[in-house]
Image 1 (cartoon, rainbow, N blue to C red):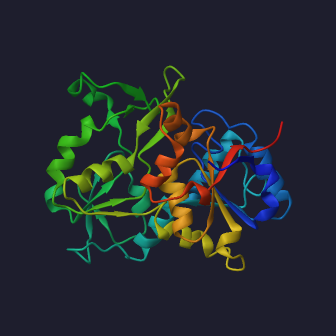
Image 2 (image 1 turned 180 degrees about the horizontal axis):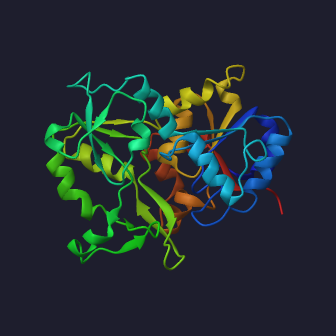
Length: 312
């Protein structure tokens, strides 16, 4: 097993930093200890610090959201990159192509409304799957009026505005099957996220679009994804870091499947947070870190293991 280190002690080894958001500096309710402090020090030292998130908000909206929480552009980070932003660029440029449909035009949304991602593009939304060329997997939440259809499921108040998160795929399985054989588009490969229940204030792991995508693939559906671990988001980030060798760019993440696999697979260095986020939750359930990495064809020896951001 590799030795666990503190990020503060290794920053001189890298020229740029990419930070995942949920599970790295934000736990769904508050900032993780030391995260903002180290990010601010890196920015003050003149190093590029990017937030690279699988969130589907556009970058400007994500910046505004985090500013309200206390994470400020040009203070704690220098650029916000979201998978939603990367997808939006492809939509604007009409670059969406599926194996059996190279020029799709109409889409159906599964989950919360997501019209903002398609604004300014040539793609048109339809509420009839039979008329759609593809389905877009949005945030998988259930409306208040539909909760009674799933009496055995446990739901969490997502936003206090009539949308509810769920810890399982059960409320979406039948609709997923009904959508076959439409190809699907997904801008958040994360399987789950830690979110706060607006009624109780408690944190819970709830499913995200990656879970829909994985289930759809197992059903035989085609899924085109944007975001970590895929090259599109790392190539997008590296456009702004052309003078820095990829190995001198450190991706700091909490998830082996997306953050670490994506970074290493695209030539970057990778640091895994082992005391917070998804990996901590897996370890607490009895998983072994070597096995977690092996499942993604990664050697633990290639990963920097972070037990904290700063000393003390």
